[in-house]
Length: 322
Image (tube, rainbow, N blue to C red):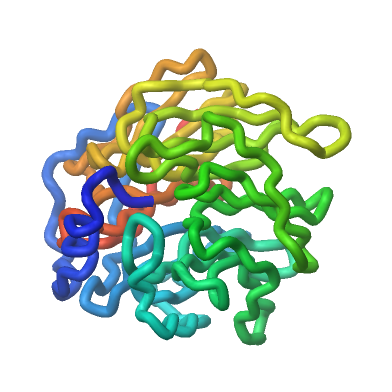
């Protein structure tokens, strides 16, 4: 989430009110294998604060999305229509004490098999910052508080143990919370999570018995083993040199192959198991500061929030080839 700039620069970019960009054709595609059939499926309304931060696709093709600046959770249909499911309360101080950013925002989101949505809200205040839950047809409810001095960002669900894992970009921590709610515990404070001037641990996934995460400031992907007793092992860096890395997803095509959003340089990268990477999407494919990646089958979802370009927050779809 976000790029390594001053708070003022980020805030100015996010606050820029612009009408949703027209659906003019993008320049000639720079798409590279293994992606193909790239298209911009949805243009979001920047003037309404609909800067898509994270995404959780459902089996029916609906994409559940957090709109960071609007403090909202929405559902995007296969046809591209947007339905707002919840708008979270604004903190009494306006969120000016939100670490690193100075405004309140919704961040990571996951969907359980029963349709329950879990998502994160960062406000810089003790009464609102934390893990929230939204059951189908229900109202949003905070189920676990997180430190006001932190910035909860990435979220992953371990369905087997009914555990939620949260990256804290400001405090360099992975928190663990039961899906039933309760007290959050610090699962890992490994140095690999720490920020180096702006924001540290960012994207988060559970994969092959480990918590995988990115560090925006350090441009890294790393894995922390989940030990037999549930505790955290020692982090191992899996890839470096990924400027402005945000969210990511495993492709399922080859062991530990990753597609990652590189927010700062406006790219999507394919990261191989040996740590090397290549660019597979660029601004020529419609990217506007990509923030999150998700897969449903062979469909790749790429969300762009346009925090810095302030032009066209959007959803791009691509096909993952064999």
